[in-house]
Image (cartoon, rainbow, N blue to C red; front, side, top):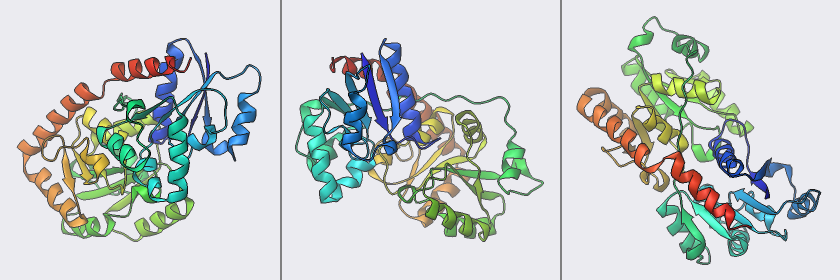
Length: 343
């Protein structure tokens, strides 16, 4: 079977990584899967034209009900959708988008939510299609490059110090876009850094929103203790995560943060903003720490610094949690089974 797979493919984003992983599952089951960026298409008519080309696509798949799913509305072939997170957490609040997403969900053969919470939200805000919404957590694989120099990474990010090994580097992994709120902790963190120069915050991720990127660059330049790193390939990012003191998430909304789960898999403590998508995977004081304000972030960070037992516990439990709930084998079997229903 030949499948068309639409997703938002900004380089080095969680969406891109997820799409590539799912595509590999589909192809390993013997299908042909063509992954295309939803941003290439202006309207559903463009996708109708593509699907009618030779050799014809026999089925389709999309990540994100609105950004990609709406483009499949007029095709004559069966399709499935995967919730992105912002579609159910944010876009449903906009009536025009909600109506479109409802139509997409009605027409889709199946839908996949990463968490039970996301499924519940979809059922609450969209015409209930319970029987066709499956819950499948993201499968997580980490891969650390051997050729990674921590000192060089810090120096290239602007961190200048003789005491590299004594630094406590908090790594905020996020694409530079509003929903990730990369500046949320900056002011409070800088004050904390001035009290103890060994605490530094490094923001790393692709520059997705040009306006916000310029804002982040300006703020970081004039803020002590906060740095912006150049984005890295997945293996180098995982190496940086493994070396840092803690991985931070400050998003306003998340479907399921791959960076949080990757940090757990790498044995690194997680400090995540207390929002539904994060609370679904981070159990406070068990698999990580949650915070609801910048001030509380500092308090939880201080606990992580002083309480070694707490640190060891969240690291141990986080790793176990990912092994139990985010295995690649289960994820692969789910998508292969669902794709078979598109025949």
